[in-house]
Length: 327
Image (cartoon, rainbow, N blue to C red; front, side, top):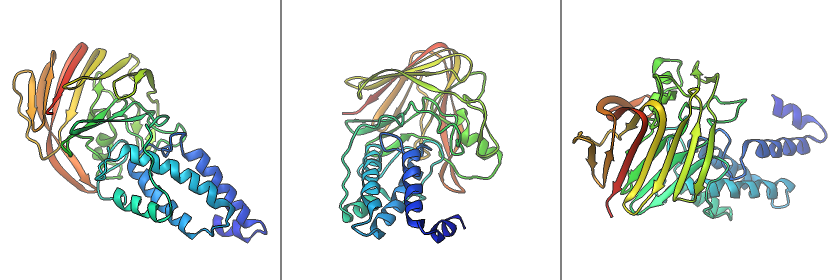
């Protein structure tokens, strides 16, 4: 194997250390996020690198570099996870694969590391913590240009938990097979964002391939108060504004025409009431468009799905939605 050939050399250890440092520098963004932008994979890799740290001798020259990088990884994980371990299923991600966040924290603490929460930055993911709710926003790139295998066509999507339970969810993934299901799970249709002419914002195909892709631009940001971002993956600009207010938050979509989708957790049973939906802890209202509820299959693990409901609204020019949260 490559590793054995490296270690057979006289300076094999130095080469191995150099290769690891090289990959740490390449694969981790300045805010500590893994560059494939899946919280699930970030946690898996973090756990394995904690194993490596535990095996290194205290005098090993690599230990300090790895420890410093792991601190940033742990900080980013803490910024994306709730204390009880919930996190958004952006890109390839689902339940039951990554080690529980509480175990990662305990393992890190045993190795002398502790999470210092810092606001996520370069990754393009945001986590707004509000009274009784958590809002995660994706204003990120879909992933690294040269290895977007775990990427989804999900620019400007978001997910929301209320009272510690998922309300608006990413449908997640249930398979890596090259099937219509895999194509749908990676599509714009399967995310809480806008499609134009039923097209994907990025050309996801072949299970793990991406052709032409959308790039997100952050136009304005006031920490956990206002966030404006846009992309032009449809050849026209889709701009989305998130604004926090006293009752919750507001989402405005600007696009010549489009279809907005919101995917609800399978344990909820939304009912249309004119131009609003009331659910435990939250009321969602909108001011325009043609709403309908339809079924979809939410992934709750690999090869596991549950039927759930999603809201679909077609609109022209602008869509305004308010999310009123219970105090």
